[in-house]
Length: 182
Length: 113
Figure 1 (cartoon, chains in turn cyan, brown):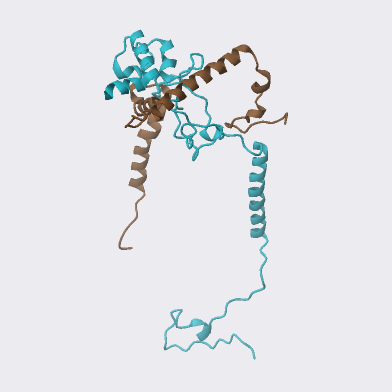
Figure 2 (cartoon, rainbow over the protein chains, first blue to last red):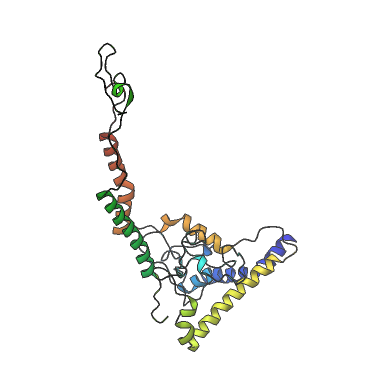
């Protein structure tokens, strides 16, 4: 009873899987999982069905040996960039169920990298940041070159200019130092 | 706003995207309609599973499984090219020698002196 209901529930997804398997010579779960491009024996037009994207939209990530396999290249847009008003299946991730995930999905979540349009143009941001930092650096440089402080004299110490503390022997009479004038 | 230029690596606001106003060919519209149909099919599957009163288990997300599998098994499709060899040497081999040299030569004398 339970298994029959499970099968009914899988519905469209299950039928598509069966169709994919019957077309090619792949067995079991490997028909659903990302696979090697050339060695899988799966024909090119089955891959978009596996990933739930259009045939025209499917474009594998460049095969340069870095281990991507036949995973599709999706647009490099962060989740923050997606419509906040649309009713997503998972609102915090701004993603629908069974939607193909970007390879760097965990980088593009809303807590991390954000590719949404900036409020201020790039040139303005650069000018403001480097302008402020440059100005502060310049002013600190000037302040170092031309110090300005209250007039001070050399520091005066008690006990004959700290004769004992400076290592002078207690037997020797220190010279009398008078740091005041009455 | 005619001279708007998006920041590097950022996207353009949808309202400033020229495709919204100029790209009205039937092919583009058909493509958009196909994408919407795919999306609707997936939504339907999800809603059927979500609202099924006899469902007792978690709804499994095949796209998530595929993503996890792809990220966990890159070595199956690894090829030793110039770029991958360079990266491997830079991050895997060079630090060993550099750190060995640094630790060997940079010594602090404890005690005495």
